[in-house]
Amino acid sequence: MTHDPHQQAQELIACRGDGLTEAQQTWLQAHLASCDSCRDYAEAADQLVRALRSVPIAADPALVRTTQLRARAYAHKLQQQQERMWLIWISCAVVTLFTALTTPLLWQGFAWVGAWIRVPALLWQTGFVMFWIAPALAASLLFAARGTFLGSRNGTPQG
Amino acid sequence: MNATACYFVNWMEPENTAIARGLRRHDPDLLDRLIEQYQHRLLRYLIYLTGSRETAEDLFQETWLRVLERGGQYDGKHNFSTWLFAVARNLTIDLQRRKKPESLDTPRGEDEAPLDIPDSGQPSALDVVAQRELSERVMAGLARIPADYRETIVLRFHEGLSLEEIATVTGAPVGTVKSRLYRGLNALMPRLKGAQG
Ligand SMILES: [Zn+2]
Image (cartoon, rainbow over the protein chains, first blue to last red):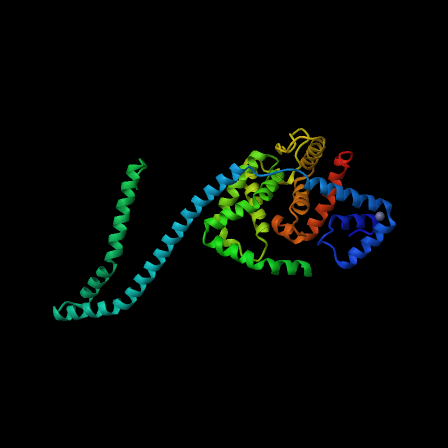
């Protein structure tokens, strides 16, 4: 902040409105009452602001309409994406819960069958692991095949 | 923040909270209403920022799509217009960086065309001619001062944002906003001398 009272007054004039404390407003009013050049500056600033506000710029109704239509279409797309994500989250939660509940039962089932047909523990345990990861394995094979299929349709090199 | 500004923020809160909630839901009716409500202010800001009505109209559409995309980031604590202007500003900076690296911080050259003023379509009269002449001088004057002064002046005197809000939109400290206002006024005043009255 400067010590030149005229420059200080002009800096405050630029920030009139919500930019001044009460003390600054009081000081500025007192200065303006006694200083012609700063009063002229304040008057010129007011005229400039009035001139600025008088510049006629309006949005074209066609632009507004087009924007509203584009926004509406995009909003629907985003809403659908949001709903799909929500469904995926619910499915994941259900699957996780189901897995947590059934895994101990399945383990006990494999142990019982292993004892019944008298096979080594390592064998029925391997069987259990294979059975447990089978759905994920099948799904990834399916996705890989689908990816390859789409890749060949788009003419991109296959991995 | 002073008492008036605090009161203003509290008073605005329910409306802003409703907007924030609607944006999180990607509510198309809310978007319709907001586009209608802020059409002139946003376009005006973009025209002053870019200096071209055509670019501003493109950015106008992109801004609303970005508002939809990033709607979840609006917290409803600030005025919606402050956030909207910040979104528009970031898009403009992105665009200008892609075109040429220095634009927003550089004054437009004297040889470049001044900001274009559209025909207002009002009935013709002597007053209208004088008004148009004044508008052209204002726009030409604005086009010739540094971009950050121009932006601050437009946000303050045209869009009526508080100093705090301008600081939020531009990412500059309030002290810098104050000094840009003062310097911007000083740069603009001599260019309008003789056009006022
Ligand atoms: Zn003085």
